[in-house]
Image (cartoon, rainbow, N blue to C red):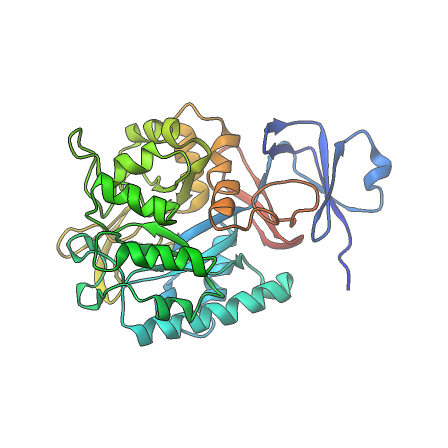
Length: 390
């Protein structure tokens, strides 16, 4: 059964080229028209939604998120991904990559089977699914450098395994790899040549030259810049320097103001431009009170925006993606439209789904949010179906 067309009036539309007023947005499961609001004949038979001056934005896409609401992708539990999808719809997220940790192969396989099932269900019926669409999986580990494991479990770190990865090439969109480990560069070459999976440099001790080789071999992404990698040094620029210098590499940033000092945001914006990708790296404590939780089997203490292992190592975040957009806008000279792009069109391009997702353009999926002046979410639509209302 086809959807009845809807239209949003009196909104401030966030389009790829900026924010426009006085337009009406007409959609069913796809964006059908963006026209002057005075053309009332265009939407007289639609369900009318009055945005009352709020922002009308493309839905956000989180390509690196482990969990929220007490659930974690790596648990591999029935129903968990749908519960998380529904929760993050309230944060403006309309598409995401459930992200696994460095764990045993059997545990990762179990998680991927759940992602595969959830991806299919979320594609089949947006209303029944009731939350953000599952766009695939992000495999963060186990092919990392144990010296920069961060909150990953060191006992499960292994050498890169092409065959294991290719078992799930139908769902894996991103995989983190430390290019300096044995077989790392060859893994990047093979995965980039043989599959559609994007390789992301991360949890690494790689120097600048090795990172450039990784990018040349096909890696086009960097996992949570500055975190689980050496910092930028003028005589050893490392992965941070390589990422900032290469205009073709998508670069993740966790803008919770704890992982990265907000004074650094502008530097990254100036270097990366439309290759900046906002992520949350959220763990199961997202949306829950302060307390003790787990991530990848390790105990995590959560207080405010800080998530720490017993050792004091940062362990994910409780960041909401709409809050990351707000934080970026507050701490840089970027317009809101530019900040939204970093959480919508740029991540969509980074995983190759920008033909259907990531911006309000004719013919694209009607993944839309309505947000107030603080970029708190009022309504969220996935392929035209309302999945969240404040």
